[in-house]
Length: 124
Image (cartoon, rainbow, N blue to C red):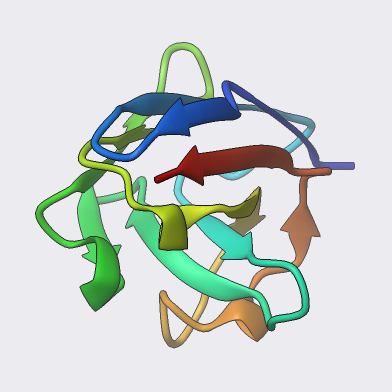
């Protein structure tokens, strides 16, 4: 059974940075899609950034391009999200997700395994 544990959330001022981590365990395939998603209060969950570990291909939501960077450490089985130039609208619960294969890397409903989330709050 896949287990995903996020960490690194917190409270920062606008313009600041945070680095999220997601430790993964319990899967057997060496290649898979993994990503970060977020859900602001009262809104639907949305994709932030995803990566295919087989090729290293990355995918970003337009709202975070140029500010966020997703990466994956195969040796540590850990996913990262470096968030720079944070804005108040980036405030949300951030979730890590994994799936062996997805047709559309930024579609929320394509991911089968989810972590519990880590809160990010950006104040103006």
